[in-house]
Image 1 (tube, rainbow, N blue to C red):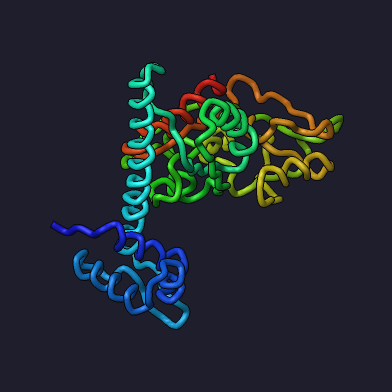
Image 2: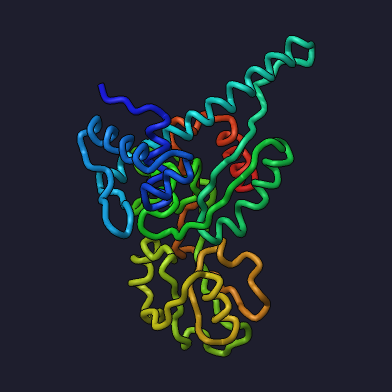
Length: 302
């Protein structure tokens, strides 16, 4: 049975994060030869080369990327174990002192990956409620573009405990993760306020816009031209629309706090929609901090 010790897992992660054996050694307080020896031992036991070595440093091989995802997730579970054991011990001590029994107080970092509009308009209220109830939790939020592997990929790779993700038939919850829908949001037509013929304007879009949810609807709209302007994100699209540059079809989260220079027109009962939800690992789904955040997300979404 192949087993790697936590110290060996930390070496692998350090090499990947720093991009080299020397840099990893400096971070870990080890010699470069010790780091190299540890990595070679891990490769031997796993039966695969984990890093491509070159003059520019070390980069994970495909096998290394798989190993690193497991390493990060295993190390995170060890951290969570320590935090929750201490919480359980504290709850037991309080109960013994007559303060009443409890499930323990979650504490420590909570790593969250979210796409831009969710981080701006969905997370703040949930995190405000979370930290008010559990001041020991320290949220760490990273903005991740919801393209390719997106926020779910961050969770799979062990870089996030929970991801706020777009979910649906074209982007379901990965089989290795668990999750649920929080918000079902519709799309609307956004155009310059007061424009006499907004549908005559150029269409503005951005790569992260979840066109997979709108593709069939989009194809059936004869009035809707192909996008001729591509922007970096939804904030840029909204700004361009506000200056009269064009029109856009955007989801509701992107329209929270829209300026008065834009007008939002409902697309009717057949408008496209998308589901926004959360994803996490089966192991972390039962952790105190992740469960607490999911409760708060559901509370504000409901």
